[in-house]
Image (tube, rainbow, N blue to C red):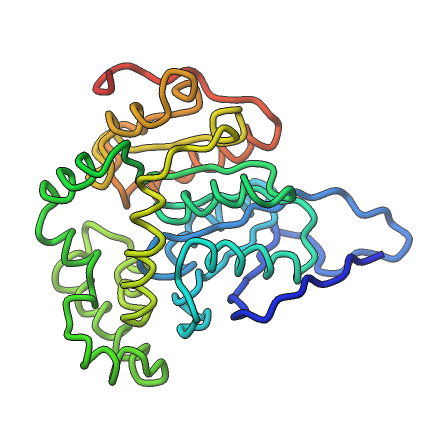
Length: 309
């Protein structure tokens, strides 16, 4: 019997289900349904679920059912909400998955999506584990401020866009989804062709501006920054979370992540040589392997010490 739908009056997130090749959308009557543990993909503060489209395809090929979600205020999810704080994001994700009837799931999150995955791991008993790709985590405000100053102007501009545009202009243009979204995609395409085609995947650049001013600004200030500074929960250090991090990640240095998880949690961290905050999404084999390990409860080898200690 189906479970009752949760009581939820907030925005209904966009949610896309993709199945492994050859999987039937409808199973034959009388045939017992095989237990499935789908992977929920959560993107970072910019863009939409398209960020993780390459990972989604690899997971499908490996036999996983995948649920791609647009976070509150991003992509095809509602851009207007009463709040963009951590609780609003987590409640919206949890309610949407409950509405869809998923009883168990694993999260694979990138950047902000990784931090939200850890929150789900703590608050939702249906969440069995979380694979965290490029987790932005700092032990103190001073370390966060110092790292922010070291980031390149280009990276900082992309993080703040379109926050750098005046609030009046954003209120009149960016909040109008019917007008802003086609314009934003066009701007992203031109940027990809002119400047960053060799650096970022096309989906990432095209979706850089697929959000409103308020959703990005308030999510950054009320959700991302507090989560970066929040201590890791005990569940994350009990084998229910795996951390994949690039050795060249400019958002969170590998040393800072190692300091954050501590000695106990270091055995659940795997460093990807040469990967940075965005290119780690191209390491699809490592991400799929982490989901497989988490599902089977077999964890990676201890954290390497080169460049970390």
